[in-house]
Image 1 (cartoon, rainbow, N blue to C red):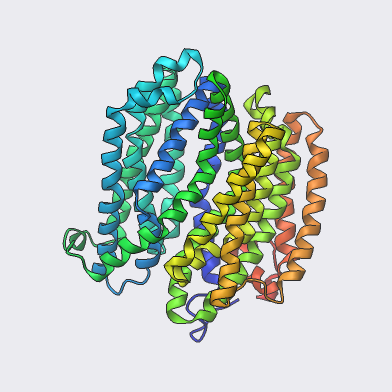
Image 2 (image 1 turned 120 degrees about the vertical axis):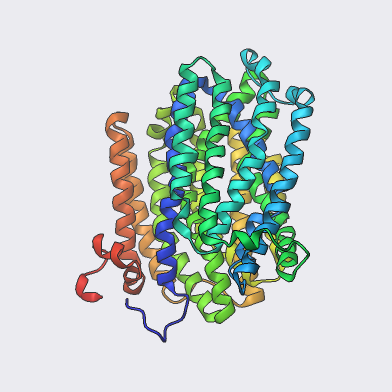
Length: 514
């Protein structure tokens, strides 16, 4: 598909270009998944569970006390009229996003002794909890800085700038540091220190990237309440409640499980849920990649023509369906082999993993509406989905947990809330903005995609019966083949051609079709 001057400024090709580099940037999540079995091997399931609980707490606090500044820039920076306005948006985000996190970290460090008894851990780790909190809480401002810095780069449509940060430094260096500190005899404490070291390196490198895409001279000026500064602040505050609730679905279940079960059982349950969540994040990666691309592109398209938003919204939904459904089916069918990487005890998380995989697939297909809603609709519409989602999750948990057990029950409640929270923005856009992704091409894409998904899931179930050494590489091959088949045979020709060189190399369309 060639582009010409009379084409819209933002097209499916724009989405595809941004998506490729963003997927590479988010592959850090895959590196993280690979690292988890090694952490469990080095520090044990209960020790890993303590780390998972503290990291979940840091994530929740960051999403509260960054005041929504990470999301705010996705709305204000793409619509900035000058470098000075873009710098003003970044400055506002750093002041109001990182500043409160520093204050909270200091308070938590002071009261670590009072907070430590709230956590359930193995007896051998009890003495470690207070010093671990005092050390690890400083991940809070570091993480806020990294999140805001990389969000600023995405808002400038520099989608691939996170590749080195997310893969090389944040994940690989964390694993290297953890291994070195473990070998040096620091034990579980070494994992917390390794996490801080990797975040510090990521923060330092993000400054270098920011200097390339923002005017640091302008960054040091202003701060007097200009229009873009006010817009950035209020955009963050408006999206903050839904950000907090969205983060609750990722991290609160580990904290809840830790509170429900005493001692080492609480730590182990938190670790098991985190394992299931990390593995299901392979599917979540699809949604996150599209979300990162869609928010700034939709903001730019909205400035030009509402029809551009409708086109890229429908295109993204078709492409997500073709990738997420077969991927989730293969991973669910091969869940026993995947959990075998974490040791025999991890098989207790199989039901939780299957539930989360299909919930993430549904969230991926429905959830692309959320970033579109954030940038084209009124601020007041953005809280509805979050409130309904958390209410449904709490109600489901109250009804379910007593019947199926804490781990499966909490996971199922989380999954129901996730799907509801993803579906509501789609309904809101259809009602309030007259936007929906289900154009005449969608039914055929969905039918063909589901058929390929069923075949892929059946093949993966057969592969899962083999020994792990054989089943794991087979599952990878089946997943890759099923995604290729869905892209090749489910998507219309125009969608495949929008993938450009990648589509040609993967033989998604014949060269003469271009």
